[in-house]
Amino acid sequence: MTTTEIQHDWADRKSPGNSAEWIERAAEAAAVLAIDAAKRDREARTPHTEVRLLKDAGLVTLLGPAEHGGGGQNWPTAYRVVREIAKADGSIGQLLGYHYLWNWAARLVGTREQWERVEAQAAREGWFFGGAVNPRDDDIVVRDEGDTLTFDGHKSFSTGSKVSDVTVLEGVLEGTEKHVFAIVPSGSPGLTFNSDWDNIGQRLTESGSVTLSGVRAPWSDALGYVGREFQPRVYTTLNVPVIQLVFVNFYLGIARGALETALAYTRDRSRPWLHGGHERAVDEPYVIDTYGDLNAKLWAAEALADRIAEEGLWFHENPGEVTERARGEHEVRVAAAKVRATDVALEVTSRIFEVTGARATTSKEGLDRFWRNIRTHTLHDPVAYKRREVGVYLLRDELPQPTWYS
Image 1: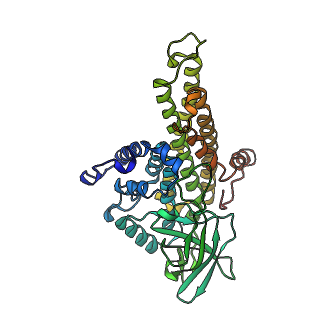
Image 2: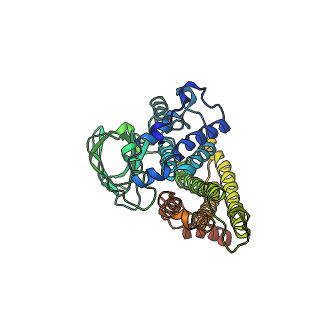
Image 3: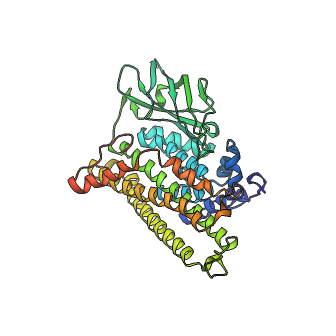
């Protein structure tokens, strides 16, 4: 049975009404995604069906305003939903997490009129967001053509590309140092998604390169601009803490999925070592010790992630009161969560083979996908620099300055 063959009754059921119910809905969707996750990973096909599943489950509009058909939920719930989905499929967990980020971009940098308009339309129409924003590449050139802006250039990564309804663009206004964000339909003329994503992990994220050739957007859609001047806020610098918490949660989801998959294999299929003196693998002392060790570490990392997510909720509820000091201290704690999530996820996804055995390494089992997914995305930005943020804060009381990565 495959994801496409599963029938669900979400359309006939009442929409979830609180955080716990939304997390349960995500778990239901994850159970469907898990059925053929290893097979889909091998085939690496564009995940149109999987995104449709997320839409049918109502998860795509989780953060949208309830009065326009959205879930009306907050970021702590969104992080947990991402974690649930990533347990089944790390690629789809990343896609959903990035979707939430780009959906939030209007609120992050836009004026109230802009973000209210974008969020209402996105909720009503069930938009799935992608983003063509990669700070490591040369900036996209944005040209002022009167009432219109045109975007030209190339980005080496554009997660969500072919499965998105709209795409967030970012570039620099020609002849200035002003950055411009705008949201355009993913089918816009001049916006070309290149089918060149061929990495060892996160294979279904549609993260290939994108070419922009005269992509047009009205000046009125330049997020955060009033009278063609950007209106800065400290809240706007929260992009990195929120992005990094999305990373933390789909890392932890992948690790939890790996551990649960390995546990099921060990219980049902692993054989005890012939010289160990035990009739069942679940009675092997080193197997028991390893699972206990890994789960204890994962529980601790999950608890830290949840605590930092709850701390971050204040910033979203009080955007006008965010100070540089409060933002910086929050970023340090997010960095600490990123460090722990990275280390724990890499350890869990590699050590599960010690307690599943040689037969668990077959391609059919697909246990390697968990490690490949973690190893691929944890290279997004060096974790050593996150440890540095924590250490410098402790030793010198220096806060990280807002950049694309801190």
